[in-house]
Image (cartoon, rainbow over all chains, first blue to last red; front, side):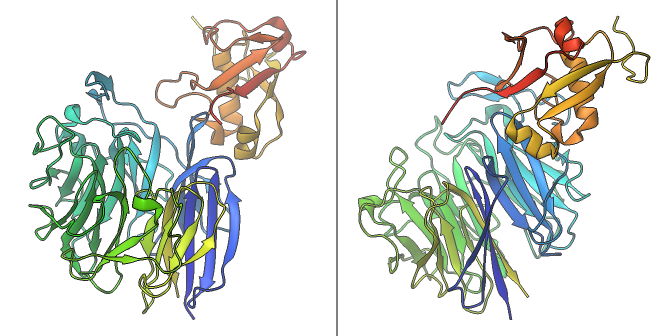
Length: 370
Length: 111
């Protein structure tokens, strides 16, 4: 019988939540790396017992942890992230040049086919790859050649937070950076192009600039990898040509600001977002925690509320804190800055809290185990 | 010119180093360590010896790229803050003799 393992990164450590396919009764393990920020954990599709975790601290820097037994035991692996050559400068918040400086790993994306290959998206924004299980890391520097000197940090830092590996084309990768935009490589990361045409951002001097957009998240469905969905600083967007052009699909959302986004495991046109009131007020509109689901690719959005607090709720859902499982009845998961992790075992129709009192949740990823 | 950094040289100093919770749990070692450090004993040489004995601490006290002390790490000894001592300056005799430990501290900051 299938099992579910939910990997939760928080401000004060990591937790692993597990359940059978019914997804009603959950075991909670952790905290792992207590007291450290865990920006992200991810399991290898090629070997589900191989997990990677990004553990960091403003005091003591970056640690990458690896487990080879499904999270029972962990060992630090490599934490040497060096940019190739002299990385030069990017723009700071005040528009002045600031030297590129490694700060932390925001996101880990294991290869679908090789447990020892994993990508890391880091702050200051760059993409690294390890092919030895995290022991050593090597930058793919061509990404920063895409006008990197014009990139600027978002409020959370200048982070590469999203990495999508096209399941149909091993040479195609997508990344997203706050605040630089989305980028695509068609040659395994050797070269890149910005894919921001159609984005409109009032918060930058040229609203339709080639780079500089604050993209919060992009997502795709493996059966239709040329269709991308994007939650931007403002606006929910869609592309049907691998990011070549984008059009807005915010439709009837109560706010098109937000961070998290996911696509249903079996329905490429079913998309989930969690609207947040505004860029200045990072909590749900009206104090009601509502997941919005579109079942027609963004044309129309419906509020999903059953089991979610509908009064006095002022949490945020961060960009890496929403995921789906691949069971026949798709499960949807998200974590909040209030420490709750919610699950819906029926594609979003009904929700329950798995845990309510964790530290602020930074990331949620899900493994569907055989 | 620095003396050779080979701890197998005769008469290395025996230096005591006290680590904060997050570092000794990361390294899975004792909170207080005894390290053989080539003379003259400096912050650089103590950190070199620390990272050689406990590679998990590489990057946790000093930045891996610049080699500089991480901003929120402090070094205390003999009731003094030695954090801003030049990294190649000799440490106090009491540290080099092992009578006083070099204390690595996570600075008080944040909540």
